[in-house]
Length: 272
Image 1 (cartoon, rainbow, N blue to C red):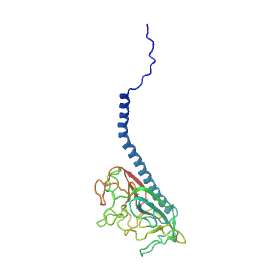
Image 2 (cartoon, one colour):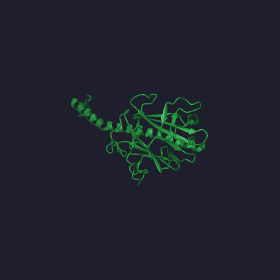
Image 3 (cartoon, one colour):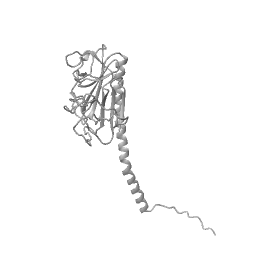
């Protein structure tokens, strides 16, 4: 005779439940760092594309309108809200882009701030949170990866720092550009001249031909100009794994270098 089927409900024992919960906990411990790093990478990538977009918009405006355009960089203390006057620090990148009204450089031989009535805004003011501009160890110039990206022009006095932007609130020699622009511009601009909220001393100029030049004491065209990007938490900047406090720092984790070619101003991202 065939025995009747067993209709009793099979349940997990307490020991089996404990084992399952412990297994899930272990797997979660491994997965959480991966999700955290992925989110950070996405945030930094989004910031990089925001900066890239500002640069390309200014370059395009200069070429289409046969004029000069400028992009200004300023870094605020990211742990506090924006203030007027601004509070310099780390953790919030502020960018403004403007252009010449009459198509000329609008500044003369004598250093001084550009007349805001001779400028028009190219785009709205941009603020990117949890972002710092570090001075990254230069690439080797031997390939197309982050570590092998095109190397920067070196000078005896300024080192690499007339070919990049970084540590905007530091003092020479570990600030880039090595000196402030002789011709800063304010935000906002227009006619009549509005009250300044920001003054941008670190600026990149685009010509009607598409050339990019750093507006420091030296106006030579560089093969490439670089902007390093590093994610922060408020104004807390990750510690460098090597080269801390110098112009050739290395960082663990997600880092992006944006490079703009001097001729043509092609913008390219190098991500590690």
